Length: 308
Image (spheres, rainbow, N blue to C red):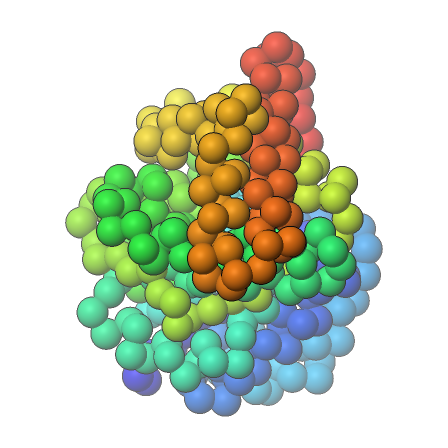
C-alpha cells in the first residue's frame, strides 16, 4: 500500500496523554507515507508546547505535517477541519488520548483491502481500579460486538475511525451534527447508509487512556446522557434514532439490572473470575445510572447550556 495516510489527531488539554498518542504514530510512519495533522482546540495546558516539541524532534519522520487551531467547540468540528486540510487517501482519526497499538501498522494494509471504513477495537489502559474494571467491562462490550451477528442498524454499529477518502468526499466532510455526543457514530451511520463497506476489526486496535477515578467515569457518561437531548441536531437525532432507542432501553437496567447480570455472566464465562465479574456488573449499572441521570436532567432543564 503506497497511498498517503493522513493521521488526524484532535486534542484539547491532553497534556497527560498526547505525547503517547503522537509517539505511537511513528511506527506507522516507518512503514508508510504518512501525513500528520494535529488539530488543537484552544488548549490552556501544555498541549501546544508538547505538540511543538514533538514536531521539532520528529517532523522529518512524516512526509507532511500540519498543526491547526480550531475553536475547541467539538470533536466533529475538529475532525472536519483536519479532514479538509489533509491530502491522504486513507484517513485515521485519533484523539489526544487514543494511541495506536504497536500491531496497528502491521494489519492496516490487509484490513483495508475490501472495506471503505473500519471500526477499530479499543483497549482501555488500566491506570487505577476504576479504569481496570472499565477495561474488563469493555472486554465484554467487544465480545458482544463480535458475537452479535444481528447488529445491522447503521447507528448501532461500533463507530469507525478509519475511512477511505472517497467516503468522506461523498459525505461532504465529517458531519457537524454534534458537540460531544455520538459524532463518530453519526459519521459511521451516514457512510453505511450511503452504501460504503464497513468492518469492525479486532486486529486494528487503539488504546484508550481514560481518566482515573470513579467521578471522572461517571461524569463522562452523565455528559453523554445530556447529549442525547441537548447536543445533537434534529438531523443527527434522526441518524442515531436506533442507537438512542437502544441507549434509553438500557435505562431499564437501573430499575431491574438484568443487563448487568448478563454482562457479569459473559465475563465469568470467558475468565471464571467471580470477583471481577461482579465489578463488571457494577460498572455497567453505574454507567447506565449516570446516562439516565444526564438524560433526565437535560429533559428538565431544556433552557440550560452545557459545556463540555
